[in-house]
Length: 235
Image (cartoon, rainbow, N blue to C red):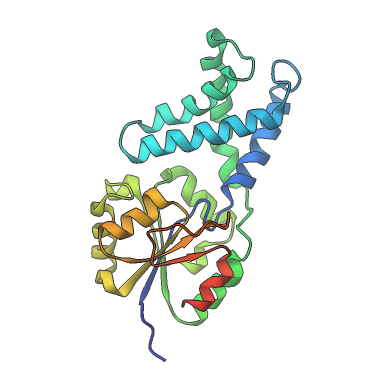
């Protein structure tokens, strides 16, 4: 049976690599090691919730070109610390130290989204050509791929810093298509982000699978799934 698509373009964070689990584990470790539990941070869970919300907003700004990499790295922690009892006078210095440890340790975590390995095995057996397309940072993404055992599934890892354009910018997608020496109709994008993965695919008229683990069905994608194994029904 011939395949409708030749190439599957995957997002990494939140789609295959379980960012929330890995990040939460790292942050809790560091809160203890920095002796921040109870004083000043009385509620670690609240700190995590604040951080996750702020981090997503910072990443949205980064993807739109409204925040640079270094500002993103420390701002997300600085704002979360200030919301949880750390004075503004000491929050920047603490954020710098905390972030320095975080960016080294977090990529070495290896939790994957449920079904990731199983669906990759399934697609590899069907001879799909697969690549990663990510807006994440170069130094982190390669470590994540290696430590989590994902490298063997992918022919290429395309990172926005190398592409000189971020999802959803069409320039990023055209750069990937050029590197793959293929046409848009031969590819399908799989990702969790409506604003970057799916909107980027829409921008170049590429089919897409929107991974929505929260069960939402509202999407601009060609398909929507709640679990990765549902991809079997599509590919």
